[in-house]
Length: 405
Image 1 (cartoon, rainbow, N blue to C red):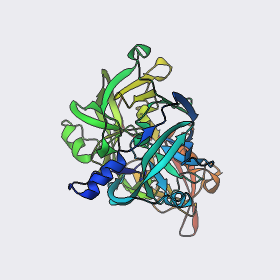
Image 2 (cartoon, rainbow, N blue to C red):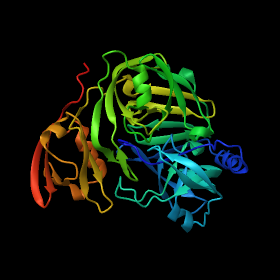
Image 3 (spheres, helix red, strand yellow):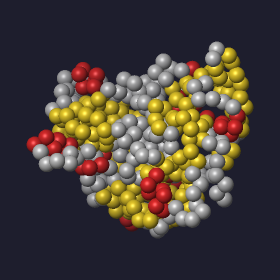
């Protein structure tokens, strides 16, 4: 999926068995340290992802973790081996591509994030070695089965996450969008909020690991669109390289009306997945316009508009170009949106990217490369690629993908 990665959502096994009962008990375990009332930690951004340092099982070493509200806590298998952590059980799980696979689950003695800690927390154990989103190792994920013991305050503009024990106070956030949410084991304790998608009531998973505004399954999009509202743009090839593997091509569209709480937005850019997801996602593209406060113990969310002004870039320009970074560090063209500037330029899937606007792709962090495709820093991209041993150059001017004024 575009801007998405193969992080794990635990599935409750459908059959009632000793294995499923044991897995549920393990996944639902955890106990927060009662002596810590408030902790504020800084994060680095890799595209939309929040990267933090955390300790495991009381060790001195700090590992690189991604904070993801729609995932369960996870640990790289090599780190687990280094720490002598052995999975207790194997369960059926689903990654963000919709693929189901067997995943080992372990109970960690302790995860500590900036002084806030949770003991006996469950974690999926799998191989992170193929991650290629950033030029550093990613050792694990801090998911909602860790975060659920706190009120979590995410300030994207300040790049900080605050974990507190105190509940949210409505009086302190009069200009906020206030919502109650559902949360449970079936979605690894991820917050699920009620919204209206073109008048259709549904639940969205609040997902800091997804980079767009909203992603929804094709079946839902077909149900909610009105006559004449089908403006799907299909991506040819792949929608991009996820953190662990290439991802399937998806459609992009504009949602006529999106409403949460008492607030409403029109012409919301969305991704339409076929058929990888079942539950719609609300991601960084929308959330980054707010200070996001999630009171997990009391099932309440506050979204405070940044700087007191509720803004959302609904008319973004783009090349429509999709790129991926291979394990050997090469950057390749993996797809493009139909009828986009990239599609019309003659650039081809499989082209090896050498330079963008005079900067060598090989030395640029993938975060920078992805951002260049769609941000407003440059209206035109001059791209040098290698195809069948020959160097070719393309000039691609960014355009509005949808005429949604």
